[in-house]
Image (cartoon, rainbow, N blue to C red; front, side, top):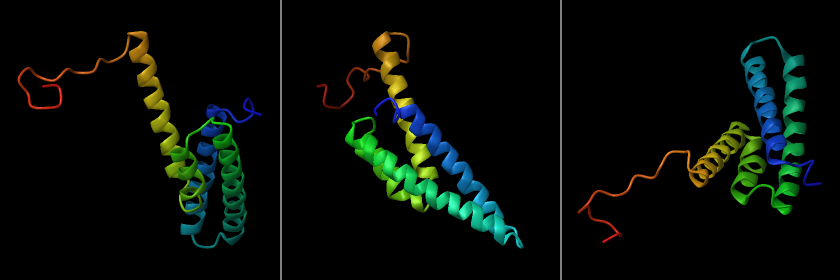
Length: 120
């Protein structure tokens, strides 16, 4: 089950859901497209339910953390962009941590000598 609910698969599903929502916003703004509004509205609703259930299962399997699950399941119904942004944020944070451990990423800047702070 963990293989099916990987972080990368959930991230790309979140991007797809955000794309559907973007199209929904466009067809809602353009007058005279009620059929497309209904189609993309239904796709967004079903997509949100599917993403919520998938993220709750992934949270239980410890594939994602609580912050990401809340971003997708709670805020995703109103704007799925929040979940997609959280996936990007966590991907970048994981990449920075991996680079630092490998020794080829950006280094943390050490505090200036004599600067106030907890290092004194």
